[in-house]
Image (cartoon, rainbow, N blue to C red; front, top):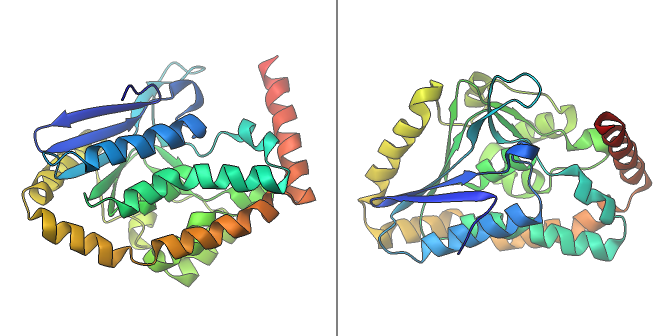
Length: 263
């Protein structure tokens, strides 16, 4: 498959998937949802690939002209203008969850290598991976409540990984975490210097890739045995949230502000 907003590279028995939407700081839209899901499924079907890595990249900041590392800055807010109707919200959240399901239901392990901002979608898709490592430049936050929304993966699947108190704290406060704070809360396993993140993750990926395919598949199936039930719960819940007056007004104000900034 040809990818536009993702880069896919095979390196021996591992593969690296990189978000590639620099004009939007890797903010996720339907194209990213679709291409990431397709990349995971394609690589999962390749028996030469024993482990995958999902990461972002360093761009040049459009205003400052300085290096700007980013994993994914969240979901592209512009697309929320169309989800006010319940039917549209239902279709949207199902499309949004396709890469999450692909990662959790794949038989091949997926490592998240988080560099720069991992907000909203970026935070949650890293959590859907089997393990997460961070660079010193990483930042983590779930800011959906600022718009009257909620992070659907976090309040369903995230409970299994992080627990009730951590999820409540992150979802209700919208606090922004440093990588060290994220490690303390169990969001990431370890923190590396920026230039060591990918080499370290590749080293771990190769170690995993060399192990039994069948054993890894069974481990993943047990660890993610509740995935479909949780995703279905979120898919039923989110259309009502999208249709609330609070969320509709919040995104309308945000989009008008974006429009003014562009003029």
